[in-house]
Image 1 (cartoon, helix red, strand yellow):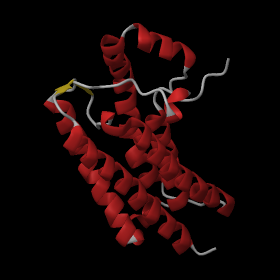
Image 2 (cartoon, rainbow, N blue to C red; image 1 turned 45 degrees about the vertical axis):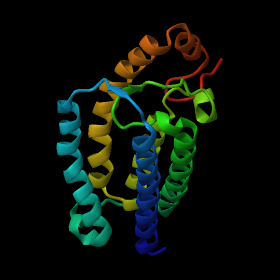
Image 3 (cartoon, rainbow, N blue to C red; image 1 turned 90 degrees about the horizontal axis):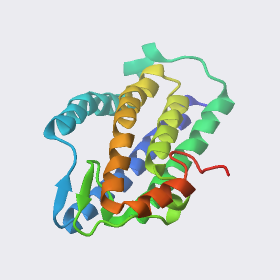
Length: 196
């Protein structure tokens, strides 16, 4: 099959993912109330500095794929079809996650005045389904584009952020919800459902 189909799928998955996240961010911003941020400005700045070049390259690749042709590699077509499936699944999952989170979502660690512990939707099985979904999305991009640079541009910084952030996030939730969050941790997996 022509590579243009997989490129178009990459573009639509990117747009779908971006739109879902943007809508959630706007909704949260409008209804957030008083917020106590748990990350400093340097964290936001670091994400901005590392994120802007990634987004610029993504857009460059979307509109002119030969820009990064030097980073392409051979991949069987079944693997690219797997990328199609994973890309669609990632958009469905991120939509479900944002529906479950409602106004509790933020790209920055925070606690709202009326913050609630979300334990429905995917959160009934997994404490951090958004991180898992972002990894699925990243892997889908890698397969769809057959491009190691596109695959690693998002994966490497994202992995560093998750490693640093997940413990801080869980500590923040323990401080806010105490025993309720401890019980929740016992019955859920961190990134994948817990196998009993």
